[in-house]
Length: 324
Image (cartoon, rainbow, N blue to C red; front, side, top):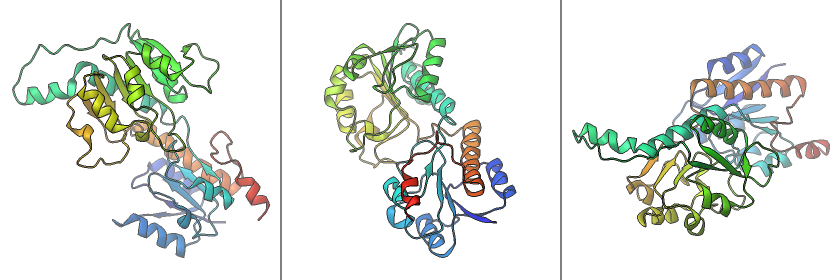
């Protein structure tokens, strides 16, 4: 039996495409500039059995368009772009690919951190302008305390890299009980101790920021803040104010509350922020592993009715399937 798979990513690793095609899947790609309209039309007119989703929003009304849809596989870990409640009510499992991008994101954390610590972005611009300023004093990482907010797969990779730099590692994660690293009882205690704070937790369910004026006041004035998790974790206006007040030394951001940022985003004017455009998982190995993991999960579910519970976002989907 042939199944139809809609791939919403603009590009996807060839190995994943081969896996799906060799399993007898018919692949549908989005090729127009208006991808949302094209996706809506495909879901209306084609018996789509699976969606391999990257960033396009899968809203409730889209999911309800196609009665043949059996599984949604996220090309990545986050699932903010999928209406999980609707998928669950329709009996559609949503799976992700935990761990496939962990090394890639962890390495970017240190790319951002080193750029912040040594002011590399500004130094690059100055040298290009023939400004040879050797008075720029950097921050040495050895002996500094790295505070990890959340201690999942990515944070654990970051912790191991930090050991190679000779950093002290502490973490705050109310769901983590056993680790070789020191666990802080509260977020406040972690922020007070840390020379570097790196965020590795999901967005809050109500969408409110984890770090705002109060939390920034707990941090050291010499602290560096890194966020490769979710933009909504940070109150950007409060962060801008803290930078203006000299309360935080530098910031490295791979994600923002709105992407791409609006022209009037207050963070864009700060010289001591290093940005990257949400590319934490965009490396050769990471993209290959993520795409092939998503493809294999689609194949396993459609052909064998097998699902990896470690990757399942909405286990309650079975309840609704049972009552169909």
